[in-house]
Picture 1: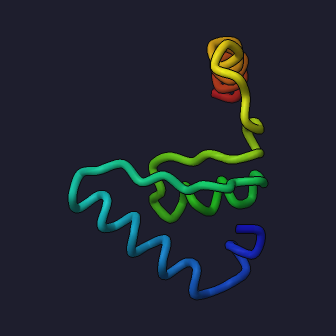
Picture 2: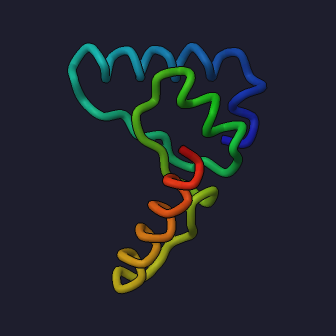
Length: 79
């Protein structure tokens, strides 16, 4: 995914999948998001959900609730 924003063919694929998801009223999830540049680009292309190391590496289920609280606080600060 690291070359995502630099490769022109990637944009066409993301737009097509995002458009299909919107047409079918289903969620699309981009995996492997590592940078805010990728996040911003995917959002602009219509991707509805993302996951990847930008947010967190894999965590045990016992740590997920605290991780979500921490991200919720960051989102509130950014708004």
